[in-house]
Image 1: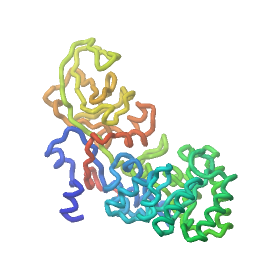
Image 2: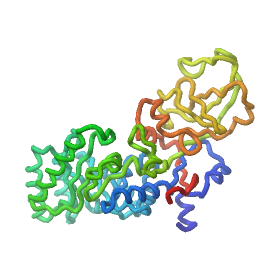
Image 3: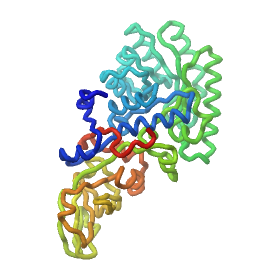
Image 4: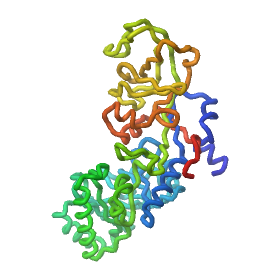
Length: 399
């Protein structure tokens, strides 16, 4: 990457230089971690291809820079839920094959076909996609989706023969090509459960039906991150790397380190105020927490408007190498930590406060405090928090 590109993407080589310029709040994204994670998974699934799933603004990490880094790391496909997400990547100059699979009647199918996006089709969309292809005079590329047991998108096995017949007629007319078949797993993050075996059995039956109908598939894909890591029999021609792309583990008791993955996001701010209070001081709305003795309170200028879960009281914030739990309710713009009675206030006012990430606690600690999953914690970090992109800011392990 040349110096001009570095400037355009706001990438630096260390967080120290970023801190020298000052910041109020920031999500630091290590793009070298994204590349590392793609490379690690590519080695696991070879010769299967890797689709980097960058939906939901790359799980809150920033779709365009993450997509570029993922492709540089070896991803040969990109995945988005919505066509509009994929079109934004095309507008940014990314020409990597892309699949979008969640549609409504207002989805811009013509723009999608014109932009050479692959489209997931569960049933009703087929006629809309064919009409769009006719309008722009370009054959559409579609991946048929089969519901193998999750109960969301996808054709049921009962409806699948009819979908194949309709798709065959449009393909003979030259309006589309069926190039893929895919599905999604419901409980792959719980490897002991039998439903994954059942879903894979249905998927294999669907493959047989597609091939018997005369379609020549380029890609068959069902494996998400947990299946990538625990079910090699689910890899097929391609896997969809979502959570693992961001260096997080889908398993409750497995660290990302166990798979060679590096968390890519570090959420940080600076302590906005430090003050000494007496015993019995109430903290935040509801006054549900009161100090046990004389102590110092530290004000953290991040709240639920920034994406912190409101219910995550007790979640850790790391300051000066030590973690302090959030006390009282998390408010819209701020929350409070109890620093104890023995600190020197001048060492804490303006000090870096790490919500999660390198130098602090893991995303999982916040997920546990909020009774949710790590997927949600990173994805919900709001646009009010600037994303800052770095290269190898906390080590080059795995590179």
